[in-house]
Image (cartoon, rainbow, N blue to C red):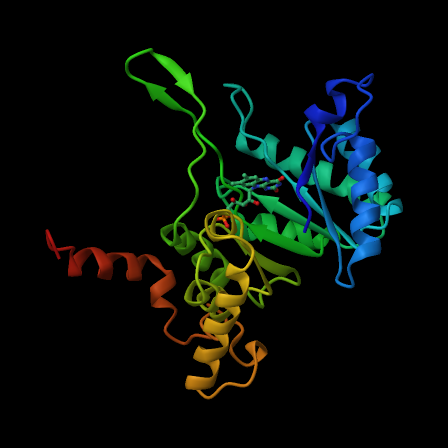
Amino acid sequence: MLHSLYEEQIAADPLRTERSTSDPVGYLEHVNRVKESVHIPVIASLNGTTDEGWTSFAPLVEQAGADALELNLYHLSTNLWTSGATLEAYTLDTVRAVRTLVSIPIAVKVFPYFSSIPSLARQFEEIGVNGLILFNRSYQPDIDLETLEVKPDLKLSSSAELLSRLYWIAMLADRVDLSLAVTGGVHTGADALKAILAGADAIQMVSALLLHGPGHLGAVRQEMERWLEAHGHSSLDEIRGIMSLEKREDSRAFSRAGVLEVLQRGIRPGG
Ligand SMILES: Cc1cc2nc3c(=O)[nH]c(=O)nc-3n(C[C@H](O)[C@H](O)[C@H](O)COP(=O)(O)O)c2cc1C
């Protein structure tokens, strides 16, 4: 999985002569080089802002050799007059346009802010999307109380962020014909196992690797292998989705009734 090419960077400075993986030509060369150097599928990623940005670049990424394409839908509305329905329709139109232009699998990465994630997932499936990645993280700036400036703040995630992902993956697994991937809050082997149990087909990790380096992947893998062995399983496929809504008879945990139970049990101060 490669980093995204951001449309703002495509437009940034067409006359710049030195190449970087964040300018369009540099990015395509990067896709090509990575593809030639590894024997695993290479997934490119686009983060567009206009119809043209999405559609002009997606076919080029495919031609550069990417095996699949992630559409990083990083759109937060600030317009008082744009309704959720309008935004959802725009999102689907964008993805549909890309779908008609490339034949490699496409996955869509979304924010959790849509009012009906299941309906959105079903509509992605209908327009031929292959994978859904839950969820994008929005980077919200902080306020400096002394200078009264808005300051950009990059906070890495913690495992606490995983829970919203587990919930929605468990809600969707086996109910839509989409590969489901988790991004956000996977730091340990235990986190990754929970995502698989909920029904994830794939897991993305960024914060944990920034904190501990790429070697951390080996530790995560070992922890998963140890757990599988200790619990008598020989593969991840054996446990994938067994905690999903589709597979659990006690679906209360996913419903309003489950929420009430949690609240009534209460959280004791200091407990
Ligand atoms: C330094 C940094 C760079 C990132 N760059 C990208 C990117 O290029 N494309 C993208 O889709 N997400 C990007 N993300 C978001 C991550 O892919 C991921 O969704 C988010 O960090 C949550 O996962 P985590 O808890 O494993 O960090 C970036 C995150 C960080 C911290």
